[in-house]
Length: 192
Image (tube, rainbow, N blue to C red):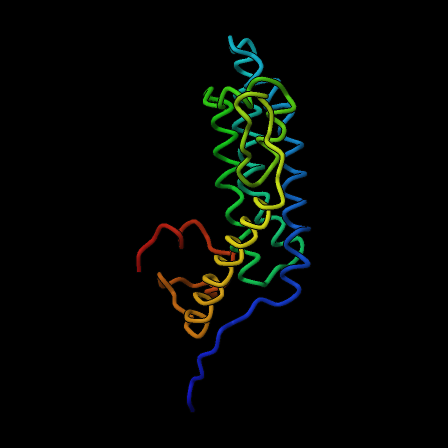
């Protein structure tokens, strides 16, 4: 038998499902934005210290980190591209939760709730106008430029997926299936 190598192109379902998943992530971030702003950003003297710490570390941070895993399981997502996109969300969400607690929110988003809401809820980078102290409006040229960048990386990802698709590599020898999310803690930290 011969192995044929072809470029794995993204299915149309990817483009239909991605906006829905990004929307769910944005909604989740929006729900966390208000209490984080009230408890961590707005209070400068940390008068709600215990409540702030409990909410940040026991509710907001786990929600930001585990929400994509629950979404993958809830919707039974098997598309590797969608899984990769979803698993990047804890990076920005978790870091923004931590920066709100430790006081590292930039000055313009910390100015008012509207700015902080746009900063925290958007799963992408929000740029602010220094003069107006509010989020910048998106121009058509900027939007086209961002679509071009996303398209370029989408081609890179498709090419990488095409090259690695035929290999079922196991980085570690474990008892669970390679593509399973059901690895025990012992399997994750043991070397066999």
